[in-house]
Amino acid sequence: MRAYLKDYTFKNEVPPEHFVHMTDWLLQWRKREPDMSFSLVLIDFTNPSELGNALGAKYAMELVRRVGSEINQALRHTDLLSRTRVSSFWVLLPKGDPDIVLSKLEPILSAARSDGMDATQLHFRKLSIPGDNAGEVTAAELLTQMQSPERLKT
Image 1 (tube, helix red, strand yellow):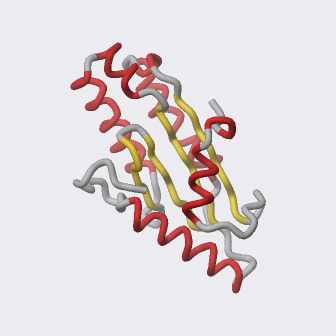
Image 2 (cartoon, rainbow, N blue to C red):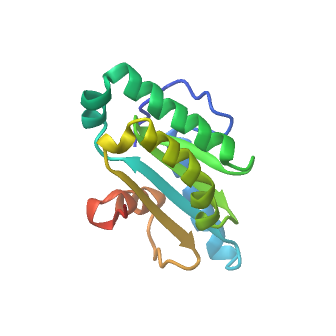
């Protein structure tokens, strides 16, 4: 993964490489501590160019940035946020319930939709370990699987 933005201005935002490293670390830690749990959430605006065409590039970028800021403000201090594209937000939740995070994010995303974000499809993907069977994969493989279009949920 490569970082889309170089200025990590949100309190919990980390470069994608660090996010992958922390996810790998948690996967390895879980092998020694089976009771340890964590969750991943992907919030993906899958067609940013369509959003830019509909709203204007400058406004669309500001809207996505505002949504990112509001997502970050809704997170706990122990949660991590990363971006792999201008419109893909990843959240790592140590001992966190992804449904609680998604319920906190719904008002933010509803406001964004009312500001014009309906021009693009918004997808969520969540994974909890243990619970969802991740098998013996690396973090990079796990994140790639979560991004695959057939696995994304609207």
